[in-house]
Image (cartoon, rainbow, N blue to C red; front, side, top):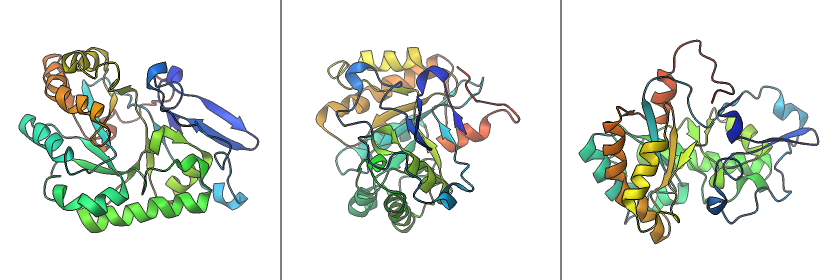
Length: 269
């Protein structure tokens, strides 16, 4: 099942396979589209063997359908030695939970920096080395995610249940691999505009506070080039602005769990 805003997704049928491009198309403004080929042929729509699709039931979410004024802040690509602890400082001071989609090799290198600081936060799988999973076959994607899964368990003592594909590129093999590991796939419906607001943290904070809606999943990064520091510089203002508007905060899993029982989020805007 794919859940999310009908105007913020694209589903393309490639042959007999399902290819989904989440962040690379409808969710980003033109200036924010990553400079990577969206799918590039590859194995994006391949299922390798007919038996691979026998039980696929993975859920792909851009947001959570709820009327409650709650949002989920998410941070990709960490942990990193310079930034991630500073993000955790801001979140801890504000008493705000968040979801960190972590890269396996970064957990191996820097897990000790965050291991004892994740109370109240959630950890998701963001691949081993941030390669484009949409160009890999099913076996390779499964191995990549499983290696990361084991690293997160071993280093952080967490068992992830969510994954986010690098660049938001979502091919059929990624869907099937995620499903085989019991993951749901989490994309986003709001994000930091790191180029537009690179010298204007107040503007970035206002943009997020003004544009979120109940159930929004907000994308930012806690590792990367220096312009991504705008997420850190803007974070206190984002939290304050959302609180002023009556919003609360939850991890992605808690946001999903809080959705009204029996509600159908399919295609709701």
